[in-house]
Amino acid sequence: MQAVYVSGVSMTKFGKDPRPLAEIFCQAALEALAASKEQEVEALYIGAMNPEEFVGESNIASQIADAMGLTGIPAMRIETASSAGAAAIQAGFQAIASGYYRRVLVLGGEKMTHLSTSATTRILAEVIDKQERQCGATMPALAAMITEKYREKFRLSQSRLEAMLCSVALKNHLNGSRNPLAQFQQAITREAYLASKLVATPLRLYDCSPITDGAAAVVLTSEKTDVRLSGIGQGTGPLSLRERDNFTSFLATRIAAVRAYQMAETSPQGIDFAEVHDAFTPFEIITTEDLGFFPPGKGGEAAIEGKTAFDGPLPINPSGGLKARGHPVGASGLAQIVEVVKRLRGQSPSKRQFKRGLTQSTGGLATNNFVTILERADSPIIQNPGLPLFSPPPATARKKAPPPAPTSDEGEIETFTILYVTPDGFLPPLALALIRQADGRLIMAQGEDSTHLKIGREVYLRQIDDLYLFTVKSQLQKVQESLKRLLRRRTASPSEEENPVDNKL
Image (cartoon, rainbow, N blue to C red):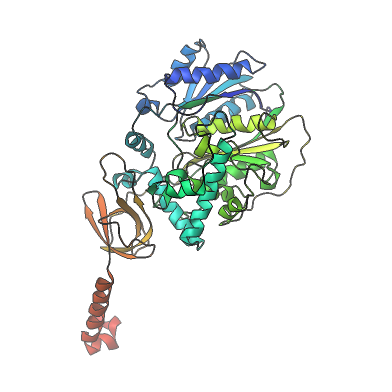
């Protein structure tokens, strides 16, 4: 396999940009080419999530090639939801590693800020399962439900969970204050975090990445430079939340990580720093665990203790991450690459010398994820022989089952949230929950009220067309049902109690 190196890199300032999307792309592309030894490229790969709905434009690869005066060379758009930029890097990497091309230009970008929050929320929600979306679920809502399940699994108090999420938010905003290209360049206080509005319990505004415009560009080459792309991995996971076996770990990240570590011949202990997908603060915590940096349930403690701080033993998101740098969905995965390359080249505020960095990009609700490892090509690196304990499962064909119909009119709450920032057509506050039925199957349902929600609480279920609704049982109702069951047992005939099996034959 041909070695793949990084030449020029660039990104625009993230935030609100009045220019057309093509012009934003062109700025990043031209700056990356100017910083590269190679001024000519043989192919163009573009990561973009949904320019059709965000800006009403399709055939974006041809548009960018034309705008840059590169008409004639192959141009291709790559889309894997919010990991599209990382997917484009993988496509460019494979093209050079195979020997098919010698130099390619990889771009990622999106323009989002001109739309309302509700409209953007609706577009972003189109990447999640249809049945869950019909209940009013959004990306923040599902992230909040995962967070609530994380809190319950690792027996965290509400205050301890809040401290973990706050630590990540404060760290990344402080890091963003050092990044001149970040959307948010001011540190925040704990008081400001706690004062921010709830988006979906327990997530606040400062737990969620912003709506952003921006683009990033990377020139990949077969000619040796100072930075080599040494490992890359991709993994996928179930689309719907209700089909997952594990709510507090992302299978797609774990698969991608093992493949990247194996290709780079390293392990989690061989990584100096990382840029990970923190579209929501709990996702940074879960991701650092899935990457093998910390044991399950300990990622939040690491943030509180400063282990992932800018000057900590393992800096996580020293650029500010999606949380402070911004999240133009098609660009984020590629912007992470740009940030890692800059730090490996010493082009960052840090005085430390880094030899190997990692990026992790999440597509959708962790359904199409990438892990990429880059390292200094001109410095000897001691390879760490240790490998992650997790082994990717074999790929097997699985027939997707239709959304389950309720097998009973009762169930219990598996996890939940109260959504305060709702998509178009839904009024806040909106209670959402995964309900586990008696047969173990899960259904996403909308609450008829938003009170008394708790994991494990019993509920009544009913269906209206394709929408499932739930109502939490009151203590009085539970007592009444217990009394009814007791009376039924007492009124059963003696023969039924003595030989119940025979009476059923």
